[in-house]
Image (cartoon, rainbow, N blue to C red; front, side):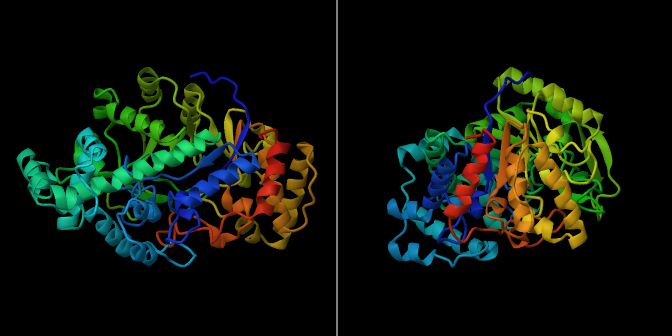
Length: 502
């Protein structure tokens, strides 16, 4: 797929959950609009977020109960109050102190608030009935209704529901239509309404949204429950092999994600309809779609179910260019980004080249003394997206503070050399100086797009880290205590302009 030349742009990576506010987690409310305004003022053209999906056990946006869903936690309580669905006291009761997200507390309190809102919602509303009749979230609403009744994972549902016997499912839907089924649809309806309004606000001001779709779905999800034949499962609908990556930079024992793997033969026989629909929906939700773990579409790492780590997996063949040809044929040009980090071989490099997708360049990985390092600005091509780091890395300041003084001296020497090569002049003495220098360097690479995590814009340390791969606890909780300060955004504005990205 050929890519035409694009105007250079800059963006900020900040997930909705990380926005500040009064309600325990970032929402689609006033702070989101305020963030859009701050992007406009500093000359940024993109806002990158993590997957918007409703999270399941573990609270990871990369493990969802439904890959097309929106996270109900992001619903703005103030909007519910404006509609008369909750009262002033209930809105006040939803307020929480500033600080990291407490998902356990949120689970207990926020859904209780949503139940109250739903009790006052008119499910005969014409717009809502149209949303219900569209059927997009039928499987999701059934799945969540069954989980509300039976708990556990879907493999523990009574067999008639586990294996989706038509009559049993139809009778169950009718039995819980008002109490559960429409409640879960109400949450998706409210999320979509609020998200569409926010996205329109951003687009009207010249801001494009970069969304993120995980390559895989969760094992306990409506996606797998609705179409088990599309996955590598046994007769009990449990995965026979699961996803992950082998030992690498992030982990000596690899990463054992545990997601079920696709049955690509069945996908191919259906002309990749499931995947094409997923890309279509994502391109409607976002302006640009980042495909997480892109390399798994060339070859994917298959780990035997029940393995304790990712050491014993094997590489198996994915759909490759055939999938992208099908996407192009059915959807035309879709603006995609390939998350091509990790172990790359000739196959995935060829797939990235043939598909024309821009890959990712992480400046934090550039300073190993190797002049051929692909992340050095001198080696970066235009068809790429440069980052200082991603949500899976430490913050730039956290990364630098892990260095010994001797290591930092060597790092500074290499960084200064890079800056000189870019004809940039910024004093680099302290680790805080080095963070700003990394941001400036990233914004002056040849990449058509540079995205800076909000943590690096603000120079935050590792307490602001979003995720540590292969560590199961205390992830995804980072939240800004207040809106980005004017000084930091003013500095970023000058840096964006210096890179010709305003």
